Image 1 (cartoon, rainbow, N blue to C red):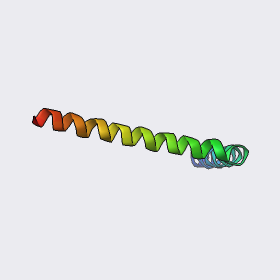
Image 2 (cartoon, helix red, strand yellow):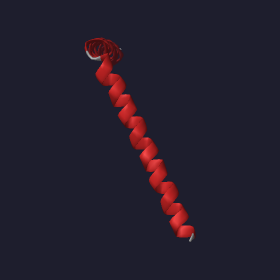
Image 3 (spheres, one colour):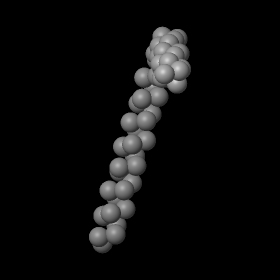
Image 4 (tube, rainbow, N blue to C red):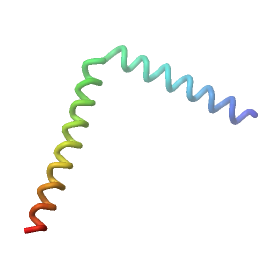
Length: 56
C-alpha cells in the first residue's frame, strides 16, 4: 500500500515538473521535437541508402 502511494506521489511530482518545463520553454521543446524528427529521418535515409548500396 505504502509503495503505491509513493509511486502516485512520484507521478504527480513528475507531471508538475514536466508541466513547468513545458510552460517555461515551449519553443525549446518544439525545437527538440523537430531535431528528434530530423535525426529519425536522417537515420532512415542512411539505412535506405546502405541497403541500396548492398543490393548493388
